[in-house]
Image (cartoon, rainbow, N blue to C red):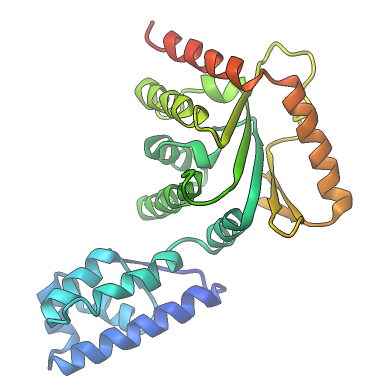
Length: 279
């Protein structure tokens, strides 16, 4: 398929889809083409063209590029890629990305998989493919694309924010996607862990104390001093802004950092695990 669907309760994406659909319809009609003729010209079915024009589907960038070329729009149709880019991601991903962009500090503990901001594309794909009930191939690609887009905030040139990650050792040893995918993922951890804005720590399995047995969570400290917490659980992720709740997770995260290896020792630990994957 050449386009993606948005959820029925996603009003923001729906508004973008309708606006883009109306513009594409006007351009097509001005060219004197029927939906069938236009679809043939750009390599899509009449049904797909109709769905896009009715705001039922979100066109992919290549759809807009081809439409711009066929319609002779001189880039004016292709520029709508900026409008649909964010709308193509699931709403909860867009909301999380906005909060992450506003944060001056992000802290995260993970005990099941490598944190999303640290994942390679192939590792992320393996994580989404492992979900049951399973995603369709198109849904997997949608989630992977959205996850990769979120990683833009790790660029030290994009803002004055800092990151702290505590990863349980089990996440380094669970071979999601196979040995080669896991090797690339460990190399990615070493790359990101050496950035000056990132503190990466590993909590070894032989530690007697682990304050994170209740599961993964993250803390976002915003510019206005507010702390937002995300507690992750099967089927749902809970957002917390009440200081009584965020303080609990703040204390818990402090304990986890104290229980984990130092950032320098953690990078050495990751290198050790990486070396073990070659034997």
